[in-house]
Image 1 (cartoon, rainbow, N blue to C red):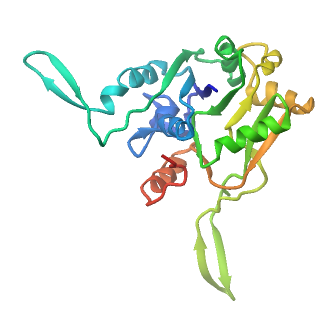
Image 2: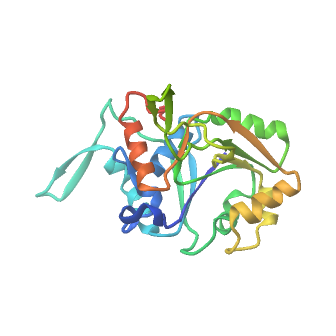
Image 3: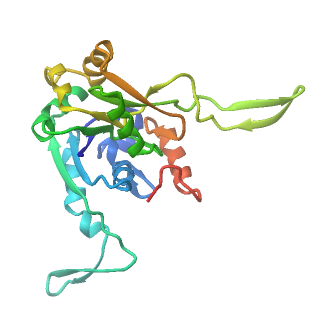
Length: 258
């Protein structure tokens, strides 16, 4: 199954982070969050990606055009003008096939997916956003999709609460906690599975995925859910980025399964 990643948004709430690069190229631990998402899928054996580009598409293309060099040791002979990549037992090369498709600067999320139809019309595919990581178990998600027998399945997550918590001992604060993982209610966390039948519900570039497609599928009882009541985090703000950085630098980043 191919993995579609929506990576064309502006990411305006990240401020200066996205002046020169698109949001999915903002780094966590020295690697773009897009890379982290791809590593999640590849850890389960899914290595073919279709990346829907838009804002600063050339940055993403340039990164992957040079990916082999970026992730390898090398010897450069300046005088001869040559470069030789070195094989190292410590370096495991990613066996990825990546389709980098420019889907337009102002295209809505559903429109971006519609533009990818020629690459996706033959079999079910996976779809996620280019700004969120999770420890979701992809094979279980796919199994849920097959069991439901619907056109699409989303991963429903409980987002982190907006504020930290305060615990009391009488009138004294006994503990101040970080914002808990389980927030209020369930939301679509990405990590979706879809069949090509969904393309009949998207008309063109101006259709948002969430409104035009997902709401239509839900109204037609064609949208299933896989409930993931564990780690999930999107990167909407600078604070989110800083939080993910802290997690990545911890002994066991929750989304790192490779």
